[in-house]
Length: 91
Image 1 (cartoon, rainbow, N blue to C red):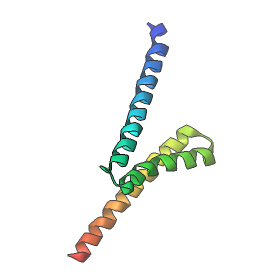
Image 2 (image 1 turned 90 degrees about the horizontal axis):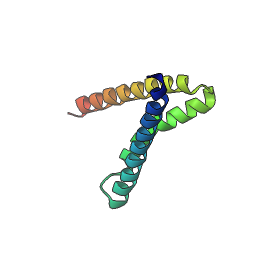
Image 3 (image 1 turned 90 degrees about the vertical axis):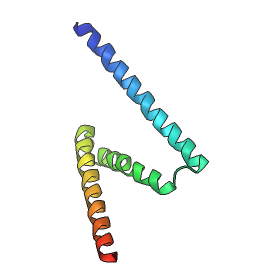
Image 4 (image 1 turned 60 degrees about the vertical axis):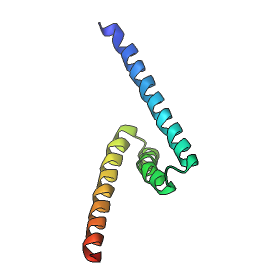
C-alpha cells in the first residue's frame, strides 16, 4: 500500500500544475479579449509576488508561504476596511 503513495503524490502535483497552467492560459486569453481589466490581473498577481519576494529573502519556502498567506490576508482585511470607511464617508 505504501508503494502507491509516491505515484499518488506525483499525480496530484501534475494535476495541480495543469490546473495552474490552465488558469494562467485562460487569464491571458480573457485579458487579450478584453473580458478582464488589467487591474484585476494585478490584484491576482500580488499574493504570488509577495510569496516570491518572501521566499527569496527568507530562503525557506514553507515559512515564506505561511507569511505570504498572512500578509495577503492582512492586505485583504485592510482593503475591506478602507472601502467600507470610504463608502461610509462618501454617503
